[in-house]
Image (cartoon, rainbow, N blue to C red):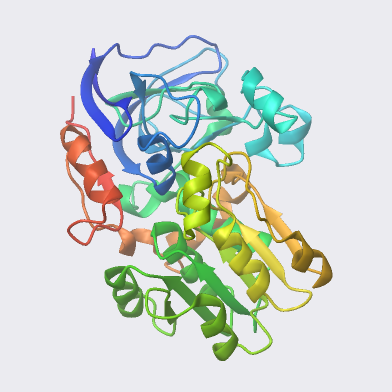
Length: 388
């Protein structure tokens, strides 16, 4: 048996005894988890906003650890290796994986409801509901990783867990947001959301040479933190200013790139809140519309915040008439792993600044509440299972 953080209902996480996973496929690896984080995407599941959750599901898609066992066909990973797992589960050999679209793998997600809803299935995702395969997550003492050669990266002993853990998702996602936006030297970039992903998006944009980066949120402690940790970032508090009007004052022609790092359960307008409450839509278009209206003509809108299904009142008119490019998608972590690990090793990128709390896994219930309700200056929670 092992301890694991499990979903038992909306806004309810419990640490329970669960069976220790076993290798069930010759390409599997079994990890003893050393560090595991709570992601903003986990809050979509925590609150019941994402369909497909079942009572007892093990949470978590950001985790790393030490390899305890490998299947007979695992080639590049061996027992004792210290590794990071990616949140997206790829087979490594289908057409999508061959094109480095690992998060769109054709093999690892068997969800018929998702195919019916989306037209195709995404890859399987760890700890992310049965819409994405129902895989047990990594907020546990142990985790099984399918296709270990594809979905694990070995990390050097010279780097701490804190330095490399976010290769599992959010550092790669921040880089992916910049890649989708084609952020380059001299660009003006606006970023919606000062959570962990948004903060890392700013760091990556600055590293890539953006001339100006504007960060938008209404949580004052997050904006103050950004001003301290990310020199040169410009702040826009939408609790004090209308976002679109203030951006127009700051950048009259509009930002070159607008990046959404918020996600679908943060509705701003009363209309969106009502329509979501009565089931007329699953996702608000409020924030995406702000990106579309604010972006310069011919600019790029990049969406890495998670969205589930349908959004009413989406402003397709200005998207088309302004000649904008809209890009979105779950991050193919494996595509960026080696490059980003190199930047971490050289000190060019340091994602550790976002970590605010490091409790034991046994405190998962409180940690979710703290992160969801933005208590105690919480920015990013990294939990540590009790060593075996």
